[in-house]
Length: 161
Image (cartoon, rainbow, N blue to C red; front, side, top):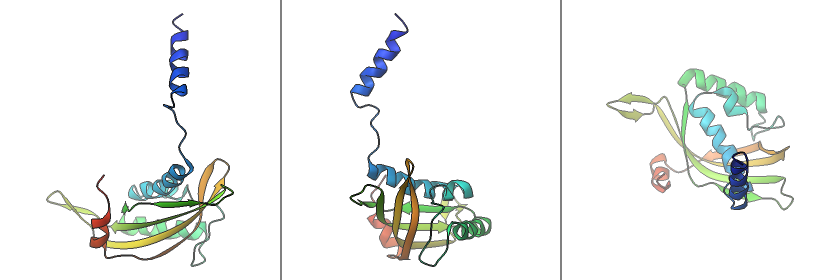
């Protein structure tokens, strides 16, 4: 009798939607956030994990080229702290390709002075990211970037957490 109680509870919770599968949009946003999470820890493997092996950026860099750039950046300046604006996701009708568009403030060389983070460098960028579903995961296959708003203007537009 006691063994059936957990199974009955689990069945009830699944039936109520407690363990709802993330939407495609939520999965894509999580993929982008995984890159920023890895960069904020200066973890090269974690930062690169969401990139497809077929990745190619607008400058012709493949996944290995991005790996080299990130390796150099992490060793020169440490972690890359980012603040993302709202991420707009568009999924192609096939459901196998998607695009994400967002603004981000990127900061390097964060140090503490009187308890306040003071970055050495702050830049605002606008990103357009192409993704494809590979097996059960979304992978970044390409991206473009351009200088965005002044970082102060962009921070004013980011909704509070």
